Figure 1 (cartoon, rainbow, N blue to C red):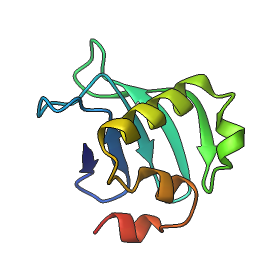
Figure 2 (figure 1 turned 90 degrees about the vertical axis):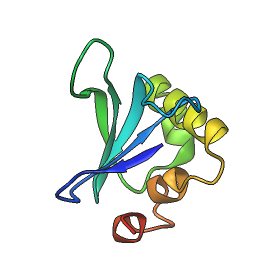
Figure 3 (figure 1 turned 180 degrees about the vertical axis):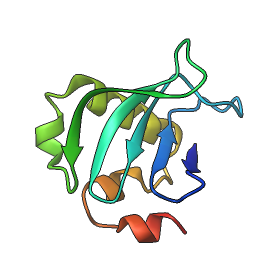
Length: 98
């Protein structure tokens, strides 16, 4: 599931398992960086782990367990998502907002 902030400054990509509700983990993407996030026990998402610059090198995030796992799980459930193309810089943040 993809949600865009009201001010369009970031996009949240949630794992979402088809329930129509947000899952507990996701990736927050800004125009130039991204970070893993969770909403476990929180009303608003909390960022966790390191912030990574975009574009990402896919081999570079393999060692970043949380970011890699959340991205892989999101793509398994949303194969048509633009998350990977945005993270790799093949699609611009501005284009992802549309």
